[in-house]
Length: 108
Image 1 (cartoon, rainbow, N blue to C red):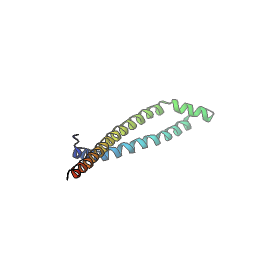
Image 2: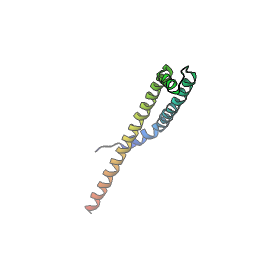
Image 3: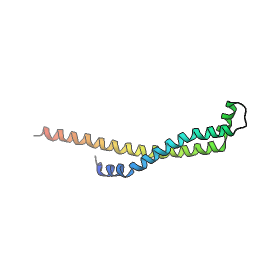
Image 4: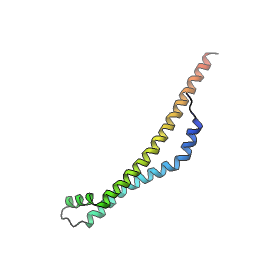
């Protein structure tokens, strides 16, 4: 099993800020959705809260924001999964190294 641990560690270090920024953007976009909905509901001329909410959900400002959320979630999940893959490679390497040490000790 050939695992370049240094490459994984370097990649994780080099992309930590990108991961943090992606997470921050995802959370921001998720929370901003609530503000957009509230603003739209206030602008609505509908009479009931239910009708105002339906109007806000159907508004182009809201649906455009949902697209921004989709992108933010995708960006975060992509780099998060890559980070997890590096962590798993490192863990596999650690297990392999531990096994090799046990084998080496058993031959003494």
